[in-house]
Figure 1 (tube, rainbow, N blue to C red):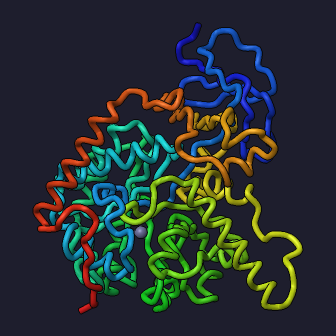
Figure 2 (figure 1 turned 90 degrees about the vertical axis):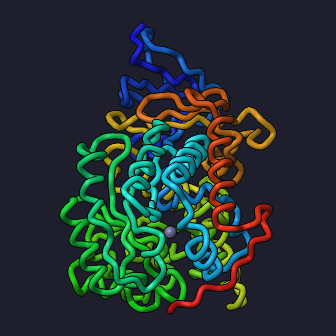
Figure 3 (figure 1 turned 45 degrees about the vertical axis):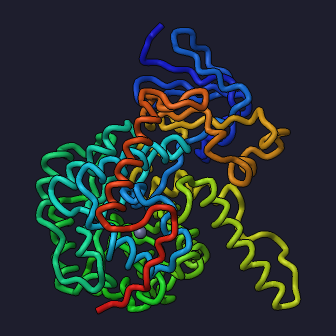
Length: 458
Ligand SMILES: [Zn+2]
């Protein structure tokens, strides 16, 4: 038997590849890190067999916007507004993170994503308070074996708007030291504040560094009241948009700014749960799709919501349907056909997410030649049986507890519902200890009663 070959046998395969489609009772062959064949019955004898009977086999999910370091502060902002979040996370807690706390948060958050079936995450890493913080942010992700686009952002104090300090030149060292190659599992991007949160001069300098480093850029635009200052138009006028710019949120952008994004080939990341909780606005699904942008999805922050993309898929689907139903009701009519299908949402969480990150040639579908980032979802249970609509079941009924197996680049990180190759209890102990240290240094009482006043911009 060749020990670099795995045959995933007898599963219901959702390839998300338009030419292959769904394969009922299908096989998928992995060689090394890549998928080499998908079909109804593959005649392979020299491979390790992964039994997928009673399982859905599909591409790993892709999260296009998550601040992984905030895992240390899980659910602390459950009942906070956006301005309380700025005051609490930035004004009080962020500066008390040591490099070890960043490592603990990134490692635990990365594993959380992976165990829930998210094989690739854009980490919007914006608590880079020193070079050691940056090193530990990278190390925490690399420790897990998952696929990440680590986007280097600002320090804690540089986030409070409107800030005039450009992003640290240390980004250049990080690129050289940690990201010499662009095809490793963890690659580099830049997380820039943009014209809502930084001064024009700082924004121009931030962009200049990112362009020097030749990496993708992600920026928050169109989130709530601050997003109404035409940030996309401002960037376009200065030639700063392009196909490697990922715009997060987009809720409150002006109508013409969506067309500008499309004209420049920009990508978009929506995080519907946080956008609705914190007043960013309704998810921009319809406006983005109208101009031909295929958005990705993101969890954003686990300081408020949970860390898996199943709930995000459901949220974006149900909001879009509720808005359409409500609009029809106001006209005294009934919706003839729902405006968005479960398959549309599943594409957002897989192939559109891969496109958003510029990784569609490597991940996002189960296509021979692509990296073997694959998840198996158990269907032999009361939540998923009887199986009448596999895509519908994944979007509307599945949850992290049903994720049986996770492979990244052909390597198993979860099998039979259990972590592989790491001690989950130790990871949890480490992030608990980081939480204790940060809260203690900040003088914040544990237990969920911390309710900061609203931040007021200077
Ligand atoms: Zn964000």
